Image 1 (cartoon, rainbow, N blue to C red):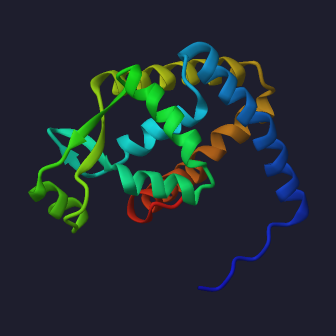
Image 2: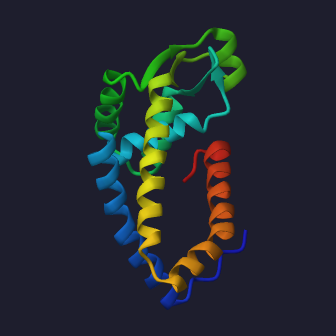
Length: 175
């Protein structure tokens, strides 16, 4: 694969500035209005994005899940702490997979421990989406007509980037 051309400095600066402003606001909204950390939300979305199902719920093998987050430079202890909170709040639950499910999903006979998204976890994701949509719509309504126009033009490329990132995460465990 040919390495991509570097972004022009001005474009990288704009992206850097945008992310630097959006991420803390996003984290604050999720924590303050939805009582969940940004990492907790990321974990719920990782499970929800799984194509594998056990008992009609999205499931991720715990060891694959841990490896995926370690690849993103999350410490095992931090991940365990966040998972414990999600288990405690019944947003996720352990799923002991049968040998047949383990073989079907993961092509292995090792540990059969999986993590499933609970109905409460689905509700939490929907709550976060509703809060973020509302906040974004309020913010967007306060912007200049030029910025509103640019945001509307950004929809299609943003959708493509988001879909590609989701596809990569589902198929390769990458971010």
